[in-house]
Length: 207
Image (cartoon, rainbow, N blue to C red; front, side, top):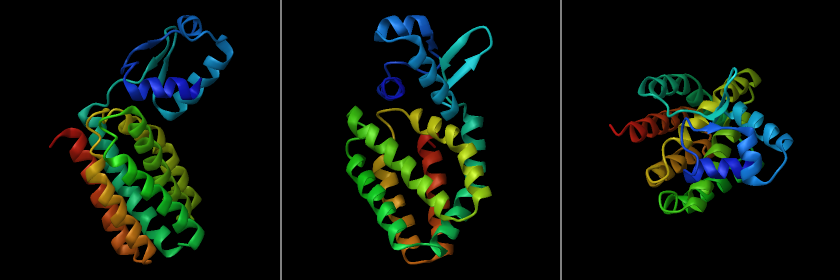
């Protein structure tokens, strides 16, 4: 049910702010309410679903401009440092896994704005790319801080909107981050990550 609902969010079948009545969903999807409740609880943790007292669940609303800008500020404090430290702690296994996400992202770049499967690949490869870097940095407190932002970053990705992800622009940015990390150049990795976060925000806001 988690994947079913997530796919509906990605495709736009359920839009920002839409009510998610468990009884209605149970009848529509022909499933019991227990797996739906479990799926909605997981989605709430990602930030893609909100729960309101006495009103139930709803799809999270579109991010406001202020929220997008504040998320950018938080990411700029955190992610360049994670990239820098990951570069210093790189291993062959880590680089192979990171390379795979970059290759997947390249595959999604031409399709993310024209088909749902491409958007799905874009979403998952982007999440995996950033999560791998956070884990490789070797500082569990920084990784926890990134995890705390993770739900809002997922929300940022989703509401960058199918049809205007900017994946073609982001793909070479991922490549630049990977190259710097693979070279063990922490300063270059930090700068490449900074440019990527700023670029993603500019693309979303349409500046």
